[in-house]
Picture 1: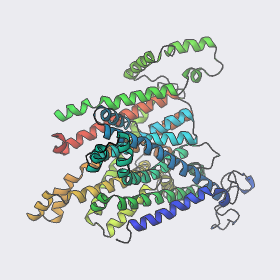
Picture 2 (picture 1 turned 90 degrees about the vertical axis):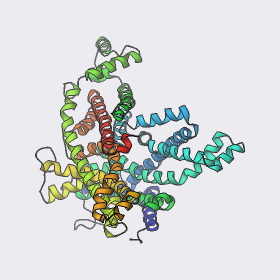
Picture 3 (picture 1 turned 180 degrees about the vertical axis):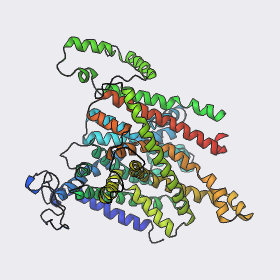
Picture 4 (picture 1 turned 90 degrees about the horizontal axis):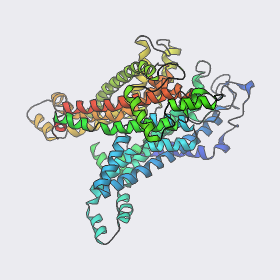
Length: 280
Length: 304
């Protein structure tokens, strides 16, 4: 099965991810209708491939007569924004701690790494549920809670890599020629870790999108009528018998984005991380 | 024995985190007086309740009372159920543990078999099919999978009930949903682990001494390759709980996860706090069990 290698995975992944990002950016141009415009005369119209469907509403309408295609197009925005920004929060926070712990060693290392261990005892979902319950669902809350729920893996990886990189000759040479600690950490060690961190970060975005949609689905994300994929799926769940396409089309949208991200991440891992490729 | 003692010494660290987390949650959820008494309470009534809950004391003293309550398992009275929150949560815990245990069991069995098959037929059709399924499974939102299963097996074919709790037929769809959420990770870890162990010297030696491929796989490779899967169980417990919250909500499974979500909508703080504490405690203890199991099956960990 050589043909399904990293190259093809990255190609498919890029097409899906870029396509979704363009949809999110140009949502106002692509959506045929206003995603919030209700029309009770046109409730639960089926998609165009059904006999009763029409091209005016290509994917049909929901329970309040809103155009489903337009709602799905706008829904991509929240998932992508939350996924990317939460990943950046986790990446920045986690990597900084791991880098400092690995480079500093001694007591700094003990404090940071025990903190990471203890923090892991708190399940992400409990953290998310509780924080959303207290502060309500908003974009900022979602980004922060998902970001600060998933930083420990970066800390662990950055810590282990820093410890081994610190002993390498090029780092010793930099220190010997008078480079300060901060300069060595950010300019010499961090760039060496970037391939591994890129792979972890890419795959994490997919998981974050799933978590965001799951919170939305449970009613813990942005409140309705906001068009998010999780909200659309939750609304569709109550109409499975009469209008199964609502839930299923939202599900397909989520899968396409997450599958693209996962293929991209796996392809990158096989390309950038020679250790892993060797194992395969 | 020495390992057991050393491992028990590490127990306080996550426990302190869990307790601190629950206390912060409790403080963040706002003034409980307003929730208990409603808006038209007199200042005198509020003052009495405030003194009753020790809210007029400084925060460190409040933390002391909080620890006392934890030891007694007293999280206050549920606003929805008018009963002690701890009792309500304890009643639901069994259902959740049942779902988690079965889901985990199915996921580990399928994950190990899939991972082994994938490694044995590396780069051939079974490996390809399993890898594609694993990536697809990782990209699948579990709540949509649950809804698809309901559409197919409950609404279309009418083989299984849509939701609720009853006999075994009520368990099938929730367990499949929860297991699918976990299987891909187990497959990927098992595959890499088998491939790595297969290259070790002792496997080469066993083959050279005449052990056939099947014997080498089952007696020499598998016992040594299973350990990463066991430690993955520990790492996945938090995710597993997240999956349980979603699964219980879809299938109206009367467990702690669904209770927690509905308590949030009802602003029932005692239930939320009790559920968070019990779930986090369960995960800490389950992690302890996982570590001990690992030490039991792998002397390398025990003797380190």
